[in-house]
Each structure stands twice: as structure tokens, then as C-alpha cells.
Length: 183
Length: 143
Image (cartoon, rainbow over all chains, first blue to last red; front, side):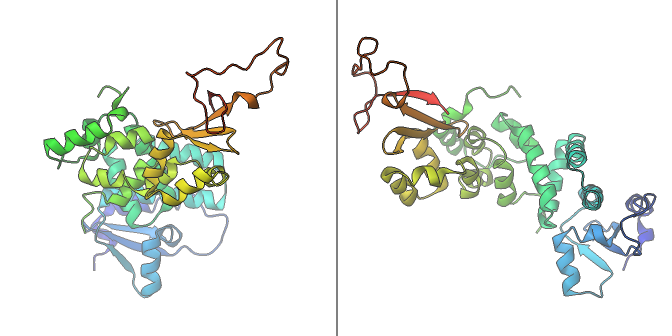
């Protein structure tokens, strides 16, 4: 089993929660190790890991494990998802809807299109509903009123339709092509 | 399963945050978008939340609710074929691009000062104005 020394940079990054002492509870924070598909190790506090429904049920099924493998998830989106969930834990402890909205908006604004698209399946797999809603709203805002070609490149999708199939779909929805933004 | 391709559920979820016009257009993006773009999950979001209570007051509306094969079909039926509701006093439809509720009110239903005084107002029938089954004249008002 890999140890956290495999990826010193990421480990440092994920443990930076500690400078802000947890005032709401005095209990010692238990760490949980997540392992991405590209073998990066993430040490996160138990409270953060429990935000991931998939991780939570993994622990309920095998409580003695210390490392949760996430075979479908690569390191970059995972680190961003962890960053988001850490903040949400703070808002859970000290509810502040306005601040939370502001944080969520900034979280997605600074991400590239690809970052957003890459995080969606991770949030979906880990079943983090709040994050999914934030991501889907952000993606929707970015593709609203955009052309079919723009949205293909936004999602990195190849066009699998034949020319005839695509033409038929465009004819069927001709009303939906009025007033579309320039690419 | 590698997650390089977004599953249809994820696409449908993202589409449900856009507009009916976006969904209609983006069905041409790829086959997975196309199947997401016809899903009940997406069109449910575009139907008014109080749709059932609006339509269940009218026989036509109840019939439509019971017979529509999908949420998308229900949506487009309401865009193209207004339904008489409220005992035939209003005609209800949806605006295609946005899903906004549209309501046509019967002119007889409006409170018009001296509306019953023939000296000031007369009720003429005009063949250009749509006449409902209950014989009332309508004009359009966006709700």
C-alpha cells in the first residue's frame, strides 16, 4: 500500500486545514486516505471524506480499511473536489448562506471549462449533490445560448452523428437556433 | 468504467439547468446529448411547478396530463395547443423558448369601467379574434 510520502506536494496541500483550529468540537480529527486512479494519495479529515457518499458507504462496508481506492477518479479533479468539500464543512459548522454562495460562485468562476467538465463525473461518482448543483449551474451558464459546435468543444465531444442525422435534428429544432451567440 | 465520457445522467442534469431553447438546439451535439435532451428529468424542470393544479381544473387539461407519453410531449403540446382552464374563462399555454406560462383572458372577464354601458362600450364579434368553445373573445396577455 502506498504511503503519503508518495506525493509530498499533494499531501501538504490537503492537510492545510489545520492552521484554522476547529473550534466547534474538541475531538481529535481522524484522517482518511484516498487514492486516485493515477496513484496519488490524499489525506483528508474524516468529516470531509464523509461528504463523499461513495467513500462513506465504502467505510460502512469495510470499517477496518485505511485507504479508499478511487479507481475512476484522477488526482486533479479530486483535489479540487476536496478543496470544495473542506469549505462546505466550515459552512456546516458556521452557517452563513451569503458567504457560502459567494464562495461557491468564486469556486467555479476561477475554473477552466475543462476543470468544470472533469469535476462533474467525480462529483457524480462520489455523490456530492451540492457540488453537482454548483457545477451544473456553472456549466449551464457557460453553454447557454451557445452553438452546437461550441458546446461540442466545451465538453470535448466528437460528433458521432452522420451528416443526415445531424441535419434532421437541426431541422426538427429549427426554432431553437434563433439568436444564438457567435462562437 | 473510465469517466472520460460524461454519463447521460450528468448531461441531463447539466441540461436541466439551461433553457428549453438550449436543450432543443443541443440535442444535435451528440447521441448522448440527444437522449439526455428527450428525458423526462430535463423537461420536468421546464414545466411549471403548479402545472398539475392548473390543468386538473379543466377536462382538457386532465385529459392531456393523463395522455401525454412524456414530459417533453406534454411541454410541446402546451406550447402548440392552448388548453382552456378555469371553466373556460382562461386559455393556458407555454412560451416555447422559455417555458414561461402564458394566459389568455376572456375579454368579458376584465373589469372595464362602464363596460356594461352600451353608450361607451359595445361588444362586437370580430372573426379575426379567436373564439373559444364557450363563445368568448380572447386577447393575449403574458403572465
